Image 1 (cartoon, helix red, strand yellow):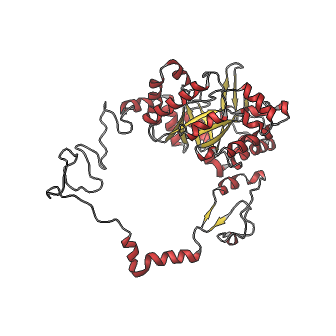
Image 2 (tube, rainbow, N blue to C red):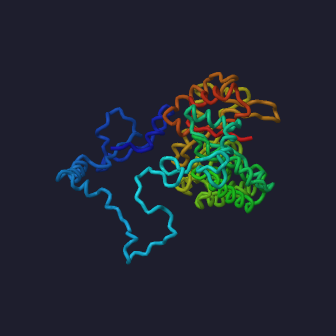
Image 3 (spheres, helix red, strand yellow):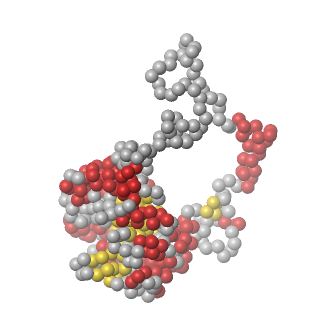
Length: 428
């Protein structure tokens, strides 16, 4: 018996009053009748195997003193006797020709399990092509490295947040990738976001340049930090137009580089594992066509779902809507409504799997610090409402800059872990 994954979102967002249709009670594999009468509609139960099927499965494996289970075990070892004339054995093959137990070292001086030991000054097994043990140790001492370590200790899933477009333009991408990879091999780091607002921030000026940057940077990072997720952030304003043709025409002219087909190709081509879409433009971008922020967001997620982007990569919504100069000024009712619009809608649209919320950023032009919390991490109504989303905590992420702490790294990240399950630790 299992509960559909939708329960995770439904439980957390029940306070918002947004319902999710249940499966039909006529479903022959439904076990909804086993749940109490006050179970919310979005909680759905289905048998993976009915009780009768489970009994048949158990009988199959247990009958005849478990003979079927014994027969399903590993087969006999397959070996080749090189002393027999009919067997041709290459004398240059590696190995000593002897059988060894699982876990025995496979090279002289290897650690248990066959992993060559990392010596100081030598390239480490974590990344034999780009990151040495010494480089990783040096990266750990940097503010970003310490931020990643502290975040992991605080129970947060860690991403390294870098901007490599300038290095790509200047021809120094290889060195920048090595530095980012050295941070990414730290314990607890799951991925790297290597650019934000691509196609919108003006650094890259042609579609060809964007494609080349994404392809080369993705390939370099996958080689330098194997196994780490690769992510990008951008905005695709035309998606908010929905079916309004005049809107699509004008928005495409205004943002020619932000072509959804071009961006979608990065996903279908396997270049990125996560795409974050910014929601910040939705409040004002579509006023000419009488499309408000709620409708624009609905249009965006319908378009994302229709393009099946989530079949190729994780889709994330990103927003700074809760921040304000000094601290969030929302009362409890306003905060709850904003959570409904900017957190619940993306998650329940079945298009975005996570939501990234900015909690603190500086505006140099105005000389202000924009926050959700008050100064020195003071609680407020907005934070109290966000803290209620504990059941979807794993789906919530934030950005943290270790170079500009509010109190100190440990206190800041511990506070953020009250609401968020993931954090993007920024690099200089």
